Length: 285
Image 1 (cartoon, helix red, strand yellow):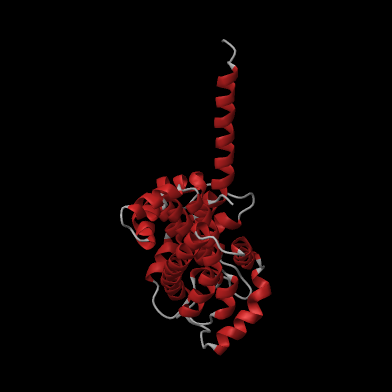
Image 2 (image 1 turned 60 degrees about the horizontal axis):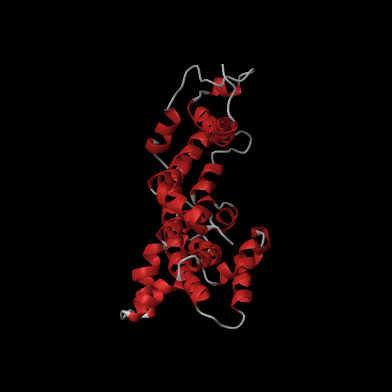
């Protein structure tokens, strides 16, 4: 057998590392799926049964068909609330953030960089440090235990993120294209919609997915600011599968799988644009 050439050894090494990274990333999700269909004996057995001996989908059936006012109904309501909260958060943060990012990217004014860094710094403040001030504001505005309150809170976090990401992405688009559109009669706003945003679509989709994840995964504020099924989101609903003295690991795993599906589906649908957005400078900064 002939020795491998350096270039072939490099390709083998790259593929081997890709397999290792894939296993490390996918292993927790794989175990989540296995735990969701394993019966309680398999989950608690020693040594652990990695492959369920008697797989069951009863937990998924319970979540979607159980009647009455219980944790399953709460999970279904939480799923709907999360979809509403995350979708509206993406809409608000995208509209506000895109216009703001365009202004920071194209307009020149004093303190532009400092203001942009200030907005970004608000995103970096630990969430726990803002719980009490935000709680007091929510009380004053009568927004406690409402999905509107969560949308306001999440939009305040997602918008600086959009500002920063899209501001950097807009700077990668040659200004000459916009100037050519304006020579042809476009207004600045018309050039933004007809030239800049179509070119920035990969970055825009990548940014919207990240903004969606910010609202979809958030737990701390949803736990503190909501108290009924009318406003609880899915992370809080999953936590309620834990009783006072016991934890139903199988139900939590099933809830985790269902909660992971919407972001995974969105990423799969728009994977080409998202990869293009990331490689094209969407996370440059």
